[in-house]
Length: 284
Image (tube, rainbow, N blue to C red):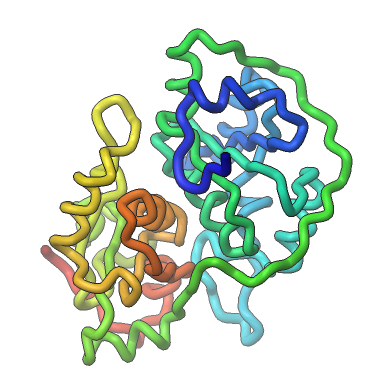
């Protein structure tokens, strides 16, 4: 069986020792970039490797003309493929990703593997807390993996850029969904980016609204109802957030709901607001 969206702690425990499975710990703290690695070193799911949002899942280099690409711009696909090979990922590897934040950061690696053409990747539903709640062990051992041979295959996802969204402001042909907290969407309490507000025409779907109280994802039927109120055509929708991370959580929720095909704006608000000529909306 191949897992492509979510996997339960029970299911992972049944397969965790399979040599053809790869597990990645994606814990992170935006205010303290070293916290995730420290937490991993303090104890992680046995066999898990650590994936750092800043250095493994992003490339802070500017664009070809010196332009700012956002706080967590995507690395070059070729560089990411090399990272996957270094981690021991093969074409037929089942990948499982997790964090301790309801999938806030793990969903980014889930989406990036799909970006690299790898379908067999799932987020641990409920993350490390769900694993521990079942009485499963944690380890401080760092696994050693032989290099993998994953190929660079056609992407399973799509992206848009700021130019696409500038055009969309007048046409409103695509629904743009912002995953940030409602106050930041309105332009209030902005602490991460220099300008508060949102892309004109965007709608707000806080990524945490995809979760139940226990940190696991809501049922597919509920997610479908929630997103159907915002999106008429999932294949034409665009997901964005502050820096292209939590937008992936909404993309995962859409996939769970069976609403496939939405695109990611990787630069998101942090890239958008860095260019003063781009319009800004505030309020609800």
